[in-house]
Image (cartoon, rainbow, N blue to C red; front, side, top):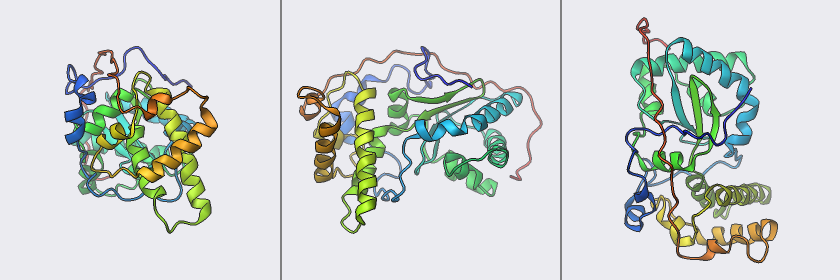
Length: 281
């Protein structure tokens, strides 16, 4: 079993080609929104945001899904999360592809010991009427899709299946909303705080070349309110654990640098003729 963590040719959808540097433009950041983000629901107390860690035990299931997709002449690329939204296709999937993929995931869940995850969310689809709710809530050129691709964190990649982690800043802002709640028991708050600290460290590790600030985080997904007191607590704990006197000092700077992004090849969703599947899931 193998996974690619930093491939030279990260998949890049045609909607995004030649349109990347605006992601770090202040004006674009100030008006960028994500569908369904106006009133984000708070995350549940049991956090499982780190799909790099939670995905490793499911690699046998991922390989099975990949092999089955290849047999149907398909390649599916998804941005995944262990919280809502669970699945965002990198490119649009046809109705036929959605049905086939859902059937394959359902079989994989039955064959392997799959913990609650994006796979169980797909498995829960009960009819064709529910497919758009899962696979068409976002469009390939949506802001959250573009940022997740630029993050370049691949969880799994094989001939038929590519899985990428959702933008960690999106997850962090949601977790900060939960951390700011006053009615949580102490143990749940500690779990949430530890998750935010680890997530902030992951963000600093991945986004080399960007100088973060509160203003930057406020502008990204600005429809999710920034909980400054919660962020201050996370930053203080993060510095105590990970930082020396000079490490990550740029996080407190209100300036940020543009990150250079390699233009990369587009994966083709090749299909061979196949019998039209029935609408039954």
